[in-house]
Image 1 (spheres, one colour):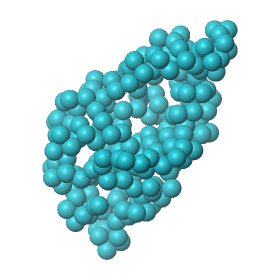
Image 2: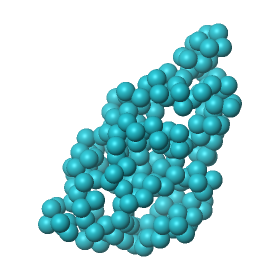
Image 3: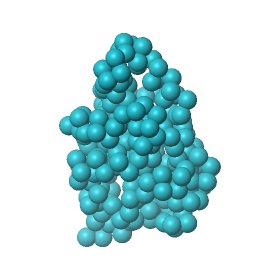
Image 4: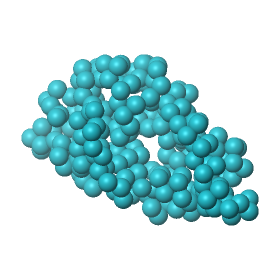
Length: 223
């Protein structure tokens, strides 16, 4: 699936790719609705259904990922509530070994995430993964989500990369489709972004379960 000899740049998503998506699913679908119901004296199921509808209305655009947006909309400190559950933030299996090998190679490695800066800082504090990247790109800096038209061109304007020699790994089909339309050659997704849920089937893009399946060989590295 990956011809490492042909790849110069590696673009990596964070949530559901390098990190287990369980934290985000649990936070948005269980913890936040429960705390919302407690704070505003609402029935829990009623609060959950209301929030799920509001989340669906914003899915696919930048508001969906924006901590400040949801803090304003819900009258809550979403960043502080994420702190309450930070112990659930977890790095996926084999990720650190994969990143260490890439870091030791000639390739440029970028973290490219839709996560809001306040979520990003929390997760990097918890995991320490920032040391492996040549650059960290937050889509909020472009005012465009990765799945929206124009994002990849905006990224290339500040972090130039050769599309035909670039690998993107992301768990989001819409993001991969957008990158495909832009011309990024190597695209991979994840079979099981959330370790507590069943592996996905019927995926359009090539998929891996864990990063040991595409680990660069040591002889491929300039060490």
